[in-house]
Image (tube, rainbow, N blue to C red):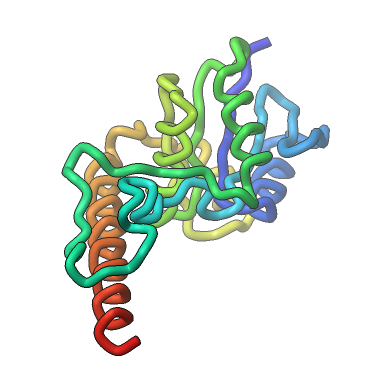
Length: 185
């Protein structure tokens, strides 16, 4: 049997979607039924690495090491310790031979797009994906959303915007925190 894997941002959203599409069999980290597997990300499973992951010298906070700015193609991501188990569930589901495609059902917006794409890329997934874009969890809205899925590539610019915001936040946050901490103790 071939499945479509639906990935939401939160377990509660996954449960609501699963109920509407008939995926009622519960498993560890996902639900199954009616040709679907439904799982979730638990928010940010993948996060930007701390400066010491780039170079050991950043372990100690020194003003002369600032600014810390990773090269454009050298941004490092880590899997959050608290969510490693759920990431492994998602990765295993994505790699299943029976999973023919993925439906991205994370929150409609920049952050939801980022959360899904980071998991998708970190898992090494190459399968096609579509985007469920809904702003209501009402059964009717979910059904209509599944009838109007968009190609995932239509949201590439939103993903790029999310990456820019995330990386800018990291650069400003890391550097300002370290600067003011070293200046003022």
